[in-house]
Image (cartoon, rainbow, N blue to C red; front, side):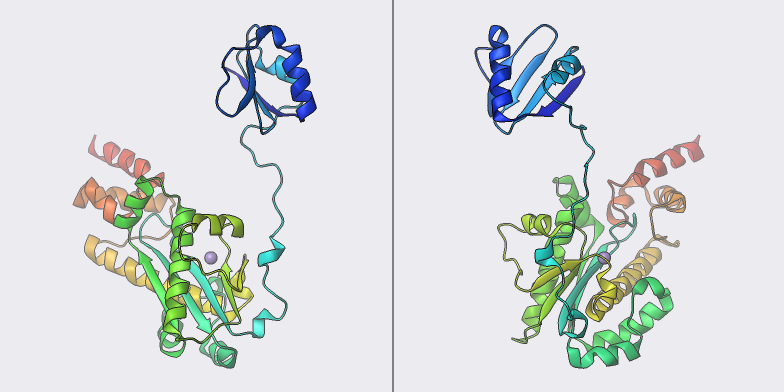
Length: 312
Ligand code: MN
């Protein structure tokens, strides 16, 4: 069945209602202004201004009144929210930075770290080699992280896949999990800092700030002086430090998983990951995926198909 949605003004909606006066239904669905059933079409007009056309004549009826909205595509990319943009001069301030690792990896946990970089420590951190972790290889990450965790206050959370899968199966989005973890990590770090107040908190942006805070509604939210930016690692060393610590923790967890599995557990979510997952199923049974992987990723089905092919 085809359908079409348009948005109209209140006056156009009133014209529509009059035009369809002969085919109005006696009862209207919740939230609707009217419903009409002209030949080959059911029209439902909502208080929001949206009008839904269903049935074989949906397209032609809708075209009389407006232009159909694209059903799913987001049309314009919203500009960054200026309310949460980092203030000028933030690079030399005392800042808590927060970042996560592992969200796109089929194997392994999500690790979220935040780190406090006091402005008096910034030059030392540079000397330790802290910079955008994308420019660092794993051995360097490990080396720098080991020094960092002895040098600056930080907080780290590891969301293992058993828990991740439980939350995901209850309908929680990965975005919400990340928001909960960042907020928790920052709040833990503030507590550790015993009254020392950062001049700013900078989160490497993974969602629009409005959505981030919506995910946290009903909880104790750290919001004061909190800013968001994409590529925040290059905006303040605290985020680069957080990223290095999160990646270090992720590498340790992946090593543990490799030892448990008796094989190398790969990063990412590409075809090599499907192969490894298939091997894991053959060695340990399908149930092992629950503790090793983010089950809802497409890799699960791909790995199962690989196993079937190998067994037949
Ligand atoms: Mn990030």
